[in-house]
Length: 147
Image 1 (tube, rainbow, N blue to C red):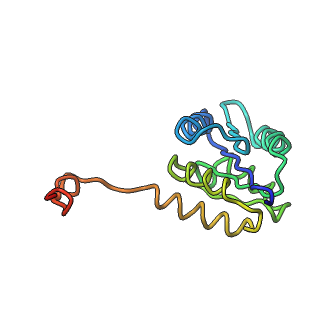
Image 2 (cartoon, rainbow, N blue to C red):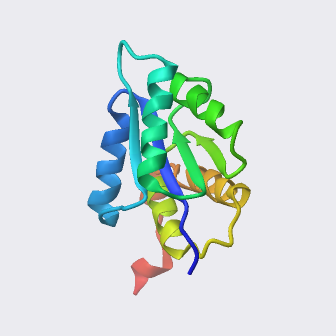
Image 3 (cartoon, helix red, strand yellow):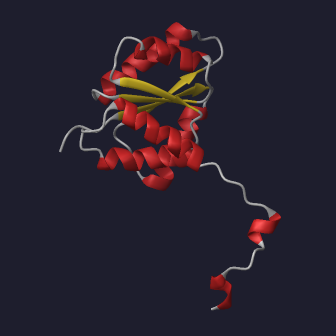
């Protein structure tokens, strides 16, 4: 089996720590998942340094940066690293269902998927993780109800 890809969640404030903690609470402890935070008073260089530390700790060739917001400092810092390494990629708009889905994807990764494929999967997971549940949809009669 090949090497699984690493995931770095990079966000404003403590969001990254919180979403990683939530993911591990639901999915279990993750070896190849790191949280990086931008806290008040820090700039892009601080985030880059944190990313570089996380990359060393992950020890993986392929890295998916999961950011909270396109154009924010955590995203911009990730862009600087991705621009220098074709095995890195970014998906902005991280949510908990997507992080859980990509943790599952890590566990089945045989190393054959390129970063482009991993990013496409993560983007689809972000979209699939967002749903609506309305009064109507929650009160709709289904065939199951009649059993």
